[in-house]
Image (cartoon, rainbow over all chains, first blue to last red; front, top):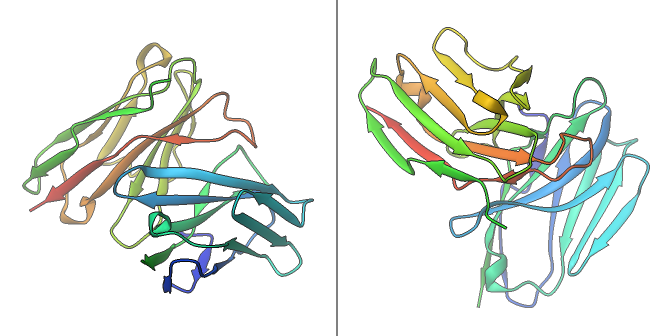
Length: 112
Length: 115
């Protein structure tokens, strides 16, 4: 079953605008990761945030994590057409072996 | 470095037929994963290998799916017999050691259509 649920399901913006997508999950986690998937490059890891971290940056990406609300957000600043893709959050549940449980994804369309 | 290789890229079969997918992980990666991604959903883990041993196969439908990783390198995922609901993209991924913060690197996937 899917652990996470992304919101919105789809997002359409213009180049240069910021895009924010949210992820909610159900169980306690070790870490949360964001992945991007497009037809050209497949599924690619973007960023990992540990359960004891609240915010992390990587280039134009900013991720926040609120473990009390079991939610995370991914902000892409100054979006480009090349950012068009589906974005998935993936959680590593606290118990057992490392195991990524993916959410349902947000489809982002960035228009020139 | 070379990425995760998968073949075939596309496969169309009729229900009740058998099919096999092949994966070659990144050289030196001990952990190998097979995921099933149904259209419109996120990937779902089917099985995880650490070297040539199974770590987690709790979501593998064992009545029809099987997987092996001989010699701890390449892996094969088989479906026998296939059902209509098996239509999906099958993704293979690998990571260095399967550690909690290891990055998983994904292959291009095999798109299976069951008619």
